[in-house]
Structures are given as C-alpha cells and as structure tokens.
Length: 118
Length: 115
Image (tube, rainbow over all chains, first blue to last red; front, side):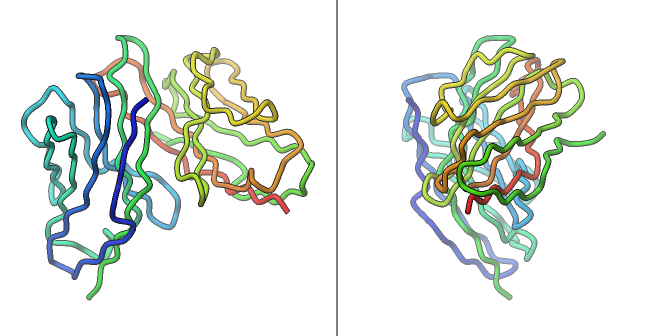
C-alpha cells in the first residue's frame, strides 16, 4: 500500500515571502500521479498542482511550483509571493496510474496548515 | 458548469439513528468517490464507483456503511446505527475516466455530528 507523509503540521509565512511545504511518499509503483490540494475553511478541496511521475520536469502553476524528486520519493510545494488567500490546509496526495479506462482513489497525507501573516 | 454538490451541508443525528448523505457529481463524470475526513484519521478513502458499480469498496469501515449509485449519477452514502466515531466530514469527488490524469473534483462535504 502507498503512504504519504507530511511532517509539518503547521507552517507560517509572511505575506509576499516564499514558503515550502514538504511531502514524502512510499510506493513500489513506477507510474503514478502526485497532487497538492488546498482546503480553505469552506471545506472545498481545490487542486493546486499535479505532477505525473513519468515527467522529469517539475510542474508549475503561476506562484505554485513543485520539487519532484522521484528517487527520493519527495514532492514539495513552493508558494512564492504568498498572499493572505493562500492561508489554508494543504494536502499532498498520491494516485496510482491505473489501467486505461479506470480510475483509482487518492491517498492523502495528514496535511499542513499554512498561516499567512502581514 | 456546476460542480459537485452534496447535501445536507451539515447533519446532526442521535447515536443509533440512520443517516443518508447525498452526492451529485459533475455531469458526465463516470467515476465517483467518497472520502471521510476526521480529526483522528485524516482523509480516508471509503468507496469508488465506476458507473453504477463499485469496483473498490475497500475503505468502508464497517458493514454499517453502504453506498449506492443509480443512473450513473447521484450517489447516496448510508450509515446505519450511527456511532459517535462516525462524526466527520464526508467528502464526495467525481472524475472522468478518460484523459491524462483523471483529476478528481470535490464537493463541499457534509459535516456529520453524532450526539
């Protein structure tokens, strides 16, 4: 079974600064997907960024980027120019690639609560 | 288009009562998932539907939990004889099964409180 570990229960960053959230995972599979989800107090899980394991290039979405180290099984999220609206719980998640035409569940880490201060 | 919707938003029930939670996925999404988010256990997978069938129900914690999906659309998660440890936020997600990543889109969840 796959496991996802987020070792930082809470992080704090000042507005406009950069913060990195850590995530490690354990799997014996070679093909999979990794995700970062944001969950604000509204409870709605919002996809922030995704990474396909077969891609060596790190994914980037505006102010959000990842550092994907496949051999080390590490998948960290960097938030640049932090904004007050970035304050939320952030979950790292893993999904097996699965067979064509099927889908599979997400396995989540325990989350990191990010505070953004003025 | 409309996102995933769930009802009710909040539900308070007495221990021992049955509850039904509803999920309305995004139109055209054939895959549907239920997750549970609780303080002690984090986010746990419960069950996955492909169309009306459930190829993976490995996460259902006990036989008090069941789910069905009819018409390849709406799903209902039923908890019988609720216990206090069932108190949690129940999240539903849906996805396509064709495409590169089968991204899962989540609903706002149902907060269940068992008193």
